[in-house]
Amino acid sequence: MPISAILINVRDIQRSVDFYTTHLGAQLVGEVTRDRADLDLVTATVHLARTEDSELSTWIPDDLQKGFRHVGFKVAAVDPMVAELDAAGVEFHLRPIDAAGGVRIAFFFDPDGTLLELVEGDVKYHDVHDVAAVERERSLGAPSRPTFDHLGVTAASLASISERYRSFGFGLVGSLHHTADPRGFEIDYLRGGQTILEVFTFAATTVDRPIQTDAAGFAGLTIAAGDGGHEGTSAALGRAVGSDAYGNARYADPDGLLVSVAP
Image (tube, rainbow, N blue to C red; front, top):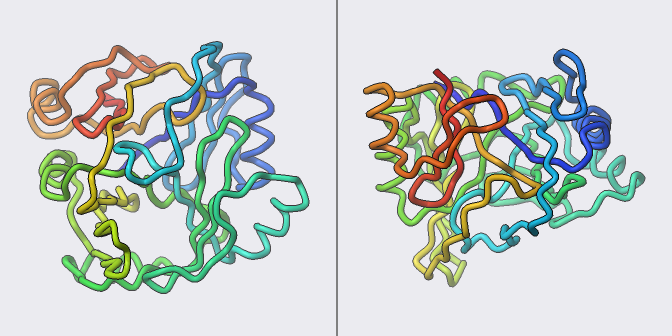
């Protein structure tokens, strides 16, 4: 089962709609209201929910902080999009580079500080764990418009997060080893449908992030209930933290990642 949606809390709905439609080719689904808007990014929907929370986000741009790291989009070419973002004065976290795995990437922020990634090319994994899944991935080719690809998350361990999301249909397809990184950095890819949890783990000590559900920025991913229904979901994800803006039960998993579970 794939990630069906990404929920982002924003201070100004129309401003964020304009940002995602202009810079990421998102297509509006339904009407824009004062409190909500839905955007189609091919493989998943981006839900924008207005927040009036005055609390500053506790998210920091340090991958050693567990939980959400970034939202990744597959694109045909990074550099032309970066030129357009530059012209619009968008803030960058990392300018275009050729990265491990043979992909070209860039990182930038949306108007409310959510970190977004552009990815050009298919990852050439150092270790392939599911040959058929990787072949299906590569058969898709370059997207005709920006397409939701993955959610980056830092986890305490690959074993724990793999076990947690197995019942939701995610399986390990490939790994990258950053042997020169003194933090002992590894990236592993858990695929569900056409979407991925890109899992960062470190030999170095990671830190927790206080749970926030209403602060501006990333506010959770949405997946379908896994094996065992509600009880199985609770057992896998742990702490319930109320409902999201769409009425779905929301959980904070042991790494602090917010997860909404659709019926």
